[in-house]
Image (cartoon, rainbow, N blue to C red; front, side, top):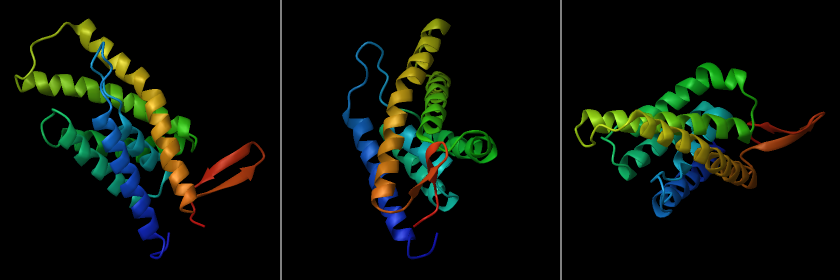
Length: 185
């Protein structure tokens, strides 16, 4: 990535993360369980898995800071969780998972489940939440995980589409079909 390409990449990053934050805040939670759509997690997973590190780190930090501002968690919890996404992606995800939207959705879904559990633990330790039955907490974690799969896939798809429209990434046809390439045009 050259210096001339950085402004376009950062512009798309800013638009995608801000749009994800607006959607996450604007859309109501599921009425029967209170779980919100984790668009910011999907965007963070997309950038952490599929984009170069000079773009992934600002996206993960910006998404984490916005999540901290939108959630009821103590400050820094979302940012720490999103930095854990980036660390997981650096150590294991980029080496083991294929570069596609499904991988971003999978990492996002697991992160959403873990973040739901962390949210319960942190709010319980702060005294803001009464002790709850373990089955209730487990059901919220599973619902978060299942709900996050399509939401994170959609967030990654929109981020990828905007990156391709801005010519930040290109697709290459290989023997198995179209494949992702993080190389700039």
